[in-house]
Image (cartoon, rainbow, N blue to C red; front, top):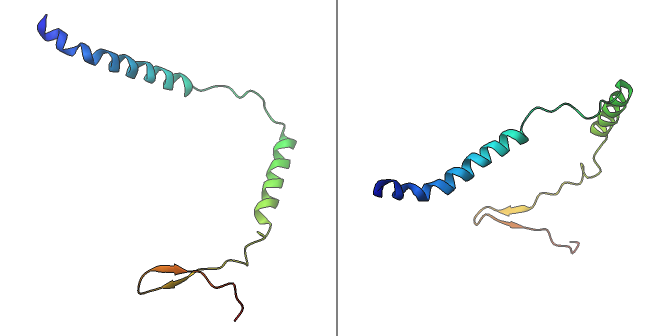
Length: 83
């Protein structure tokens, strides 16, 4: 019985691992969709998405890149004072 007692510390982690595997397999199971959208609703959503993608982003032309001092690699922000 001495050899079996050495492995009893392994039982709780093994049980937790098996329970975690069962839980993950239950969560990941295939489920039917709860509600089907109509074809018209799907088309509207696709149209709204296409319009949003094609729209110009408001900050697309205002991108400022920080100046980098090549000797040290430290980024330097431009001053707020006008030159």
